[in-house]
Amino acid sequence: MNSNLPQEIDWRLRVFDSLSFPTLIMDRNGTVVSVNQKLLEKYNISKPQVVGKSCREIFHSLFDDPNLPCNRETCPLDKTIDEGVGHSVLKQIQRQDGSMYWEDRVFSPILDDAGNVIYVVESIRDVTRTKALENIIHDIREFLNRV
Image 1 (cartoon, helix red, strand yellow):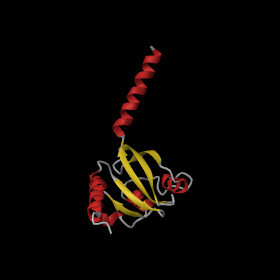
Image 2 (image 1 turned 90 degrees about the vertical axis):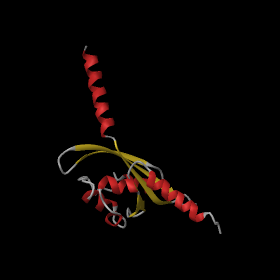
Image 3 (image 1 turned 135 degrees about the vertical axis):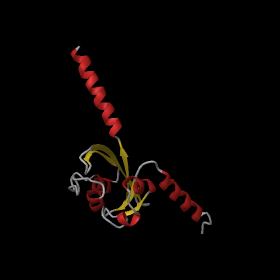
Image 4 (image 1 turned 60 degrees about the horizontal axis):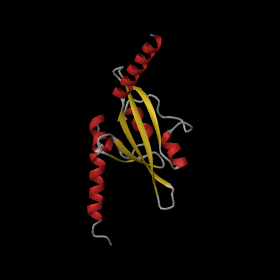
């Protein structure tokens, strides 16, 4: 037995919790099995509010995403599980106060030794400022093309 295993597990948990963006791990059924500290802080929630619940349930109720549950054909979680490769989706979301923001959600498979997807890691980045800059650049280009 590997005597370094507890240290390895502790190190991996520290890495997971130190990520600067909200991250969660889901099983093949979309049930959340783990979340990092950043996700809890950003959405002001506790682990019991998320762990053990389906992604569709938490994203609709806790994260103000009116587009969930998504359908099987467009769901990046389902695509990641079916294809065994990562997927991402860029979403514009309206908060309950009416303001809008952009999220880039990246889905990455965790594979077993046979290459089957056993878990999916979802990382969520707020890209609102990036999208605003893209819009400014687009407007400047349009202006320059008219000159």
